[in-house]
Structure formats: C-alpha cells, structure tokens
Figure 1 (cartoon, rainbow, N blue to C red):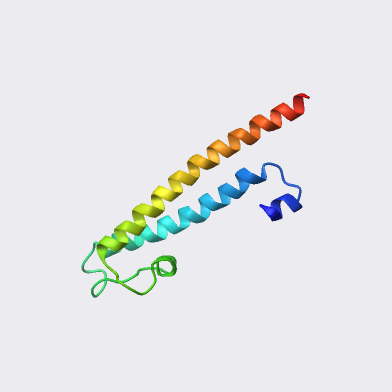
Figure 2 (tube, rainbow, N blue to C red):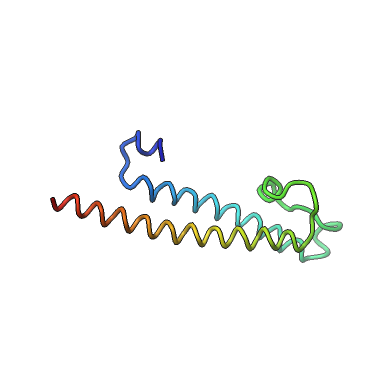
Length: 103
C-alpha cells in the first residue's frame, strides 16, 4: 500500500487488500491441490507435498492427510474472509470518494 500511495494511486487500501486476496487464493489453490493429491494413494509413494507453495507453507514435519486438509480448509476460509474485507473496504472507499467529490 505504501508503494501504491507513493505512486499516487486511488483506493490504495482496497487495492492492498485485493493483492492479499490474490496471494491467498494462489496459496489456497496450491494447498488444495496438495490435499487432493494426498487422497489418491497411487499418486505418490506414501504421502508427499505435491507443489512448492504447499511446501513453503507446511514445511517438512508431521505430514498427514488431516494436516493437509486443515491447511487447505484454513487457506480457503482466509481467502473468503479477505474477499469479504475487500468488498467492505472498497465500498467504504467508493462512498468516501463520492462524498469528497460532492463538496
């Protein structure tokens, strides 16, 4: 948001939250793919992390189908929460922008 502010962009808060939504969605896709692959017994020899995004988030220790499910569901919930926050912040910025234009 600091970079957006220095660049003179409008609606910097909603754009900052939107960037967070995009990053969280990418993580949610990677974690969900990892969870789905862990449900297919013939895909790997045992259980493994299927992509580098999931590996960055989960790490090396304690892999289990339940852990993968927990991370997948948590990342989806976070993405949905951030999307709701984005809608609220963007609506507030638009409303404030309209009020300042009228004066």
